[in-house]
Amino acid sequence: MSTIKGPIPYPDYDAYLRAEWNKFINEPERSRASLELSADISIKRVLDVGCGAGQELLPFLSGTDTVGVGTDIASEVGRVGREMYANHAPQARINFLRCAAEDLPFLSASFDVVICRLALPYTHNARAFAEASRVLRPGGKYFLKISGVRWYLLELKQALKERKPLSVIHASRVLVAGALYHLTRKQPRRRIPSPETFQSEWLLRRELRRHGLSIHCKTPDSNPVTPSFLIIKQDG
View 1 (tube, helix red, strand yellow):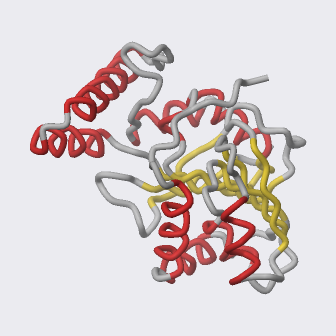
View 2: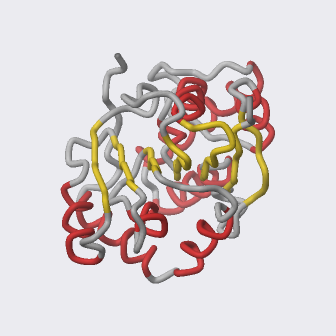
């Protein structure tokens, strides 16, 4: 059993979750893209790993009988999400559960769609991919958004500009960890340099292939700082 641990990166986590929910609501093109990219498969169960308030599940749950499950390592998982769904989508069938991405308490092939947006940097990537693949049915779709190297280079640049030594140290450690990950093909998981890491499309293709997953395309919200991908689990 994986130990549930990891930083909550915002001092007012509830406010952050509400802001992310509202941001999603105000960008309807993201909902349209999710539905369009998965329109060719039947969807009955959707999982969001590192769900926050569960807003990424909204397109799949609104006006349907689809069941959504949001998981997160935060002890507050579901507190804001249940409130937001009660206010904005009371008919949605949604459940929240605290667990780690590396140890999902679900049966194999039990989801048609798996979502993971910006949670991967904080996980043991190989184990998180193995679990995502295990719970995703053959032919199912995996929406993944990662933090690329530019994310942490921008953090480092901003921290230097604002003279924030702790942020400089954090970004530097993650950059070192990511470089080692790409060079050695082994992800550092100790505090030094850092258990957090960046990813790249090149690294993803290599790691995903090991678990029967392949990148189909980039999604419309992809950008050089936080690339987004639609990934498909191979049949058979």
